[in-house]
Length: 104
Image 1 (tube, one colour):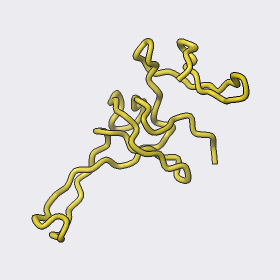
Image 2 (image 1 turned 180 degrees about the vertical axis):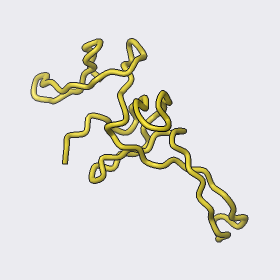
Image 3 (image 1 turned 180 degrees about the horizontal axis):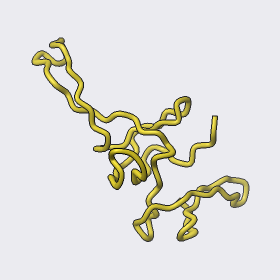
């Protein structure tokens, strides 16, 4: 298992695949599969049967996971995609943007 540098709540940009160029907030990260669900990106249609929770049934749109390697974190200072590094400050490890050298 690799060290993931993208966490839930981060704003990311898709850098490869069908949704290249899309931006969104990371809702959830699956560490075992190295995938993340990004808000509003990679929407799929799921057909659902009527149930007590959804009495109408029908087609529901939801986000499908994307591989972490297809995502790049957006630098909060320059608003462009950037690589993420890890450095030690005091006794804690912190993530930082390699473009602006700003702690995330």
